[in-house]
Image (cartoon, rainbow, N blue to C red; front, side, top):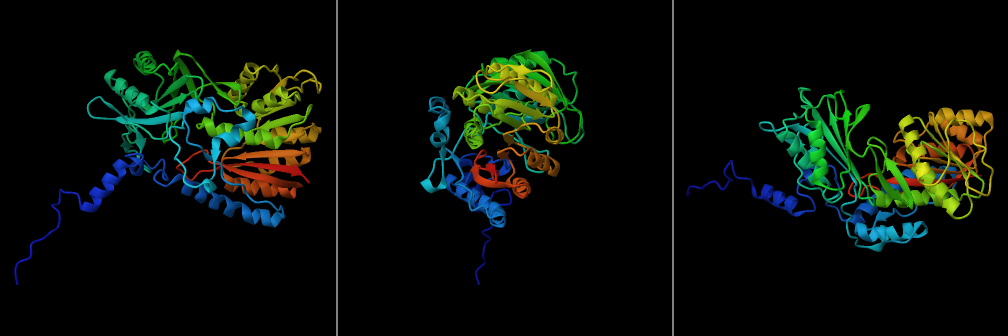
Length: 465
């Protein structure tokens, strides 16, 4: 029998299958999408993404709707129409924004959204010599995957972050090692305005004493005219959490401005602000439509953050000739400071203390009021005092609301409740609680705020039965 030679590949030569996988990844929408893991569905057709999210939402809400006998079904997931930013800026006003911006799986083959995230972040790590490495953490590790660009971030955002890392290395500013807990630079967060052309860069360090931080800040601002301000955040705690408790202004502007639904918002470095502004307008318009505000009514915006949803709703009501009284509640005092500033930017007078305003219904827009207090505590106190609330809007964190908050909401008896959620699982739990308190679900609309991921946001509209 003739001798058979081995056809196995040389140990140092990748197999044909591995080579094919590598070529496929590099030719896809992102060469590092498998290593990074941030956009797990990036290679999936967008129509299929929306269909899969529809299945998830339907499966979550169907048992609750059946138990409560509400006789509705979740509406079609509103996906993001792939469009240029310049086109978005010229689209019709708020009344048409949902129809103009969104697509559904029923429309067939859809273009995949790109460049929609206007917040970008990078961890830093020590590189060879004195260099600083930037990119994304590989899932479950402190290993940085370099990213020359990102398919879903605003154009140029990743380049700015990579250049910040390069400049830091040239200035001799050390990167933080998550394992040894030595070094200075931990992260950088870049937030860019969708329509404003302004942006904030925040460098996160393990210590406030960062040598040559002023030089780094001014060099970063010279990279792109959109970087109009630089701040330093100090995070001394171990772990992958980006933000520490204190932020210091370094150079340029202390805040940035952006526009949503015709309103202007001033944003401080650590303030919550949605990362996908095009879909944020869709989400907020659905919430405002669900409120169905009438002249002279009281709108309570719970978990209000920097006041965005409440201010958009109050501005739209005033512009339509039916001004309402707005009360916003948020336990973060810096968020309340931002909300008050944003209200003034949009033409409202603000009641500075926590006393009820004396604005009368009708006529000129009554002053708005923002209260720095835990939302549950405020609602319980308001219910006990018999305060008037006609419409309640809540946008809680992923953990959802609390039974005490929901009980107080039922005691206040607003005629409508609009619940915006970033976690449908906890929203289902809370909606059942509200159903037992006498509310019926009229509408549940899923919105794809984060294309190419499994995440989904929902707007639920309830009316008092």
